[in-house]
Length: 327
Image (cartoon, one colour):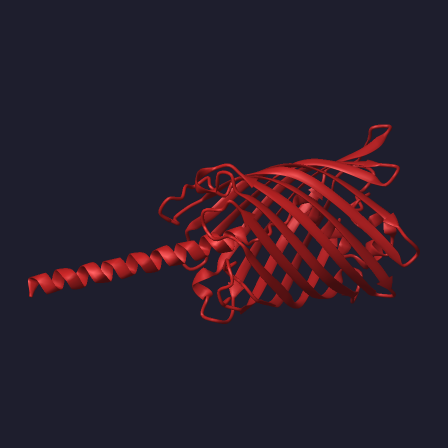
């Protein structure tokens, strides 16, 4: 009888460990599949939510992401809520059946432009800011994977008269489990970037963006055999091109982005990722600082020399509402 109890206990312990390992692997996959907003994206969001800003091609995010005062400090804050369908919420690799779900995200963000400095050949603007996002899985029994994200950044933006801008900055990101109140991930991301915005005609404008940066990442509490805390660290090179068509209060933006990541830590040493993102977004401005959005995004990642299965594809489709204020 004692022998049987020992066997049963061992089986239960083994099953519990296997379940925990699977949960941890899914958290790791979710972290890898999360696209985190860059500092430039957070800054430009403050103006893109504004109808008056979006109407001017020079304010599409490249030449002046936030319309700052000529002197002194200008600040902004806002709130975004999105409800959408996600086909592969845990970034399941390979051709396994994804566990599709609905997601509801709520983001609070704010920041400030710390003055405008005329450097003769260009205008220099320092920015600081941060955000907090609640990410909730509302279907498919995935609520144990709910998490909160915290972000912060500091950025120096140089804007030139020919429409180009250059930036240097550092951002911080942190994920915490809502269910277990554990820190699952954090990273510091120093980066450089360039951007160019120009008008094609009175209704059509475009933005080109390119960046390079180093993700100094750490994962915690995952306990996956053979992995290390630093294994998600990588160097990333990315480029994107977007068009925006304006028709009265409606703004339609198709966008393509490609990124290359080179990993060099732990089990991921030698791994390289190529990720393609295609998106289509429609913003309808209900007022000066309020907009309603509909969006579709498709992502595909091809991971070479990865010791753990890491290829995946996913798409999101949903609606959102954004509001912001500037001072």
